Image 1 (tube, rainbow, N blue to C red):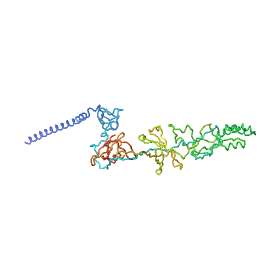
Image 2 (cartoon, rainbow, N blue to C red):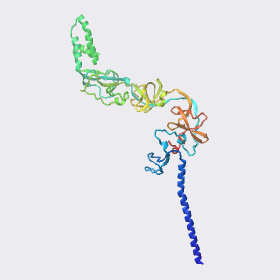
Image 3 (cartoon, one colour):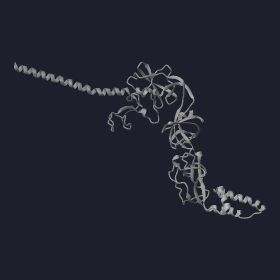
Image 4 (tube, helix red, strand yellow):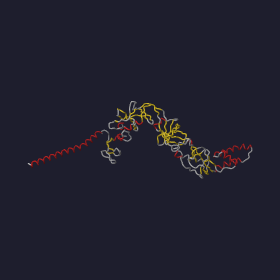
Length: 437
């Protein structure tokens, strides 16, 4: 009896093991078939999209025809349509593809506003800087070749008054004209002879004036019957002293560059020789300067001559200067696709410094339209969108077209009307994880 029971137990264990083995093999078979079926289903869903390739989202250069992982970052390769990667052909992507959320809507309790139809002053900003008024340049040239005997000025940016001494120059070219005048003045002329030589004496005087002699110096030569060994050169105008050559201070665009003008030292020294016609010093009148402003393409149609401008200094927020546009340059600024305009400013208090950065507000004519806050708009580059309220707490993205802009508002030309309600802060709703550019 005991032997019979043991035989039954062995038979039961044997059948149980067989059943468990069959169950295990069935599970293994179906688990192996599932990925294959899913892969076939995935391939079926993307049929008709073109040549299929697998690419890394982080490294687009990694491409292959079969699934796998990126050899650089080890991320899974993503199945994409190769037709969308043809170079030179822009892909027309809808707004829904750019703004993706789980259900295509956003549920939020943010503040909403309505577009307003009103008249707005479309003032706009323009950055710029203070530069020299090149009409106020006064160059001091050598009227003869010679040697600098004495310098009366010592450093750049020295303030000079009109008539101040600049330097003494010795030149053989001043000796002969003086001797001619002295020779003409040494004779005792009769009345008839004086009438004939008067024009010769006047020509000799004029020649000395052309060389830079003052009237007092010419009178001294006539009285003393003795010529001067050196000629003193005086300042022709008021200004700050600079040293530059005519071919040095013009930049590549034909404009005067402050960086080329600002030289902290004078290379002109006593004992140096200069050539006739050489520009040795320059005086820049400091009481008038230019504000050069950069106008960007979207603001080109808004500018015109005599347009009022309010200029704020970036380093002195409490200073506001009024002016008008008096010149619009007809060329683009090099390497920056913007136009420059000039505003002439008085600088008698010397508040404005060359090279100082400024921010200008240019007054434009009022414009009537449908306006919304700038914070309500998401700028996608060539497109703009807002979150429009469908029901309380439910917002959906919508593309709009804009026209004029101000510092705080956009003009809406299409996509919205006065009855719509939009989110006041669009960026707050937009989740960076679901935003695909």
